[in-house]
Image 1: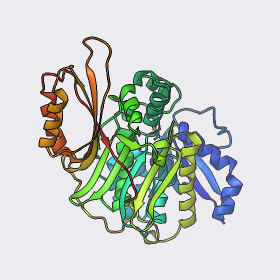
Image 2: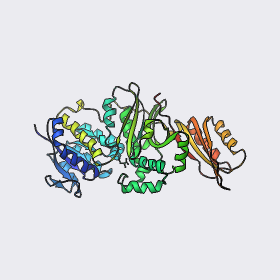
Image 3: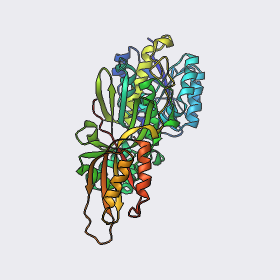
Image 4: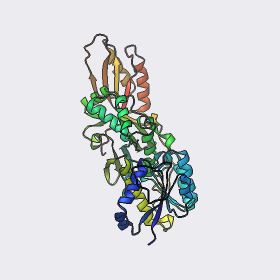
Length: 434
Ligand code: HSE
């Protein structure tokens, strides 16, 4: 049987992982597919010493790959959104199937790309775009297809998780750990994408679309990063029985779909609270199956390459079949325009750290404001401070509260004379099976 011809565009970290898996496991992959997978062309601006490409045709112009009539599947691994979008659209225009690991491209331009692919009768697969080697796209689009998905919570940025874990376990400062994450090669080219939650928002956008059958809406994600989390918050959360994780959360609520990325306190006894270092995990609650958890490496050359190659294998198996026999790009043939809920309208529990001057009655004033806003307190921790003139931290955990009410309460507490520093607010989710 004729081999399937792949064109690789990009030979960086994920490109080299993909090349090496396809080369090393060629026989095993051929046994799975029933035909061989041949890398017929590589488009890369420079060589990568991690790959021996001497037996392959290499071009410095990646657009050659998109136009090459021998190529059946273009694998886009160059990253970014402008050239990558042009490249993918050019491959589609030339009748090629596409595999990409590019979360920003799919989250921001996926609707347009999928529509172009549908009109040309080709497929665009993107398993590697979310949570690296974890097959979460396949789990949601296929394995859980019987379910009405209720909510998903994921640790979907390895760099952010590495930083929080180091702060938790070693008490290290944020900036110090970030530079180590950069040196280790986990972070995005622009590390603000990791620490400010943009990378996680890209991934959450994709997850939410395939979970609920809605169009990709990156601009609607509420995004808050981890740069304001201090070792003290991690320590206080620990004393109260919680870990702080940077979560992507999407939930089907009465008024619409919640779509949010932010640091979150989670009870320590949840499995996902114990996912540490650069590892990723995605917790999915379906109405039939209940909670399921997917764990693994969210980044890295061969971990991400594993997902890219799995997509190539899927395409190789269906090459030549009519497109309407394939899994729909976003998992649903009919998408719905369910509204995305404004963050003001979500309900969540809260951790507050309020630094106050030592004055009689200040705690009473704070609790009075909270009760006037209908906010019920679950726990209070007041730390003693032995240094004259130092502010005293008051830690408050609340029950579930409407975000808008919490905003009002925080503005009023912030206006008290005794409150000098900006109040730290971190959302808290129990993530129980109910
Ligand atoms: N910078 C990303 C992370 C890489 O840290 O998770 C994988 O998308």
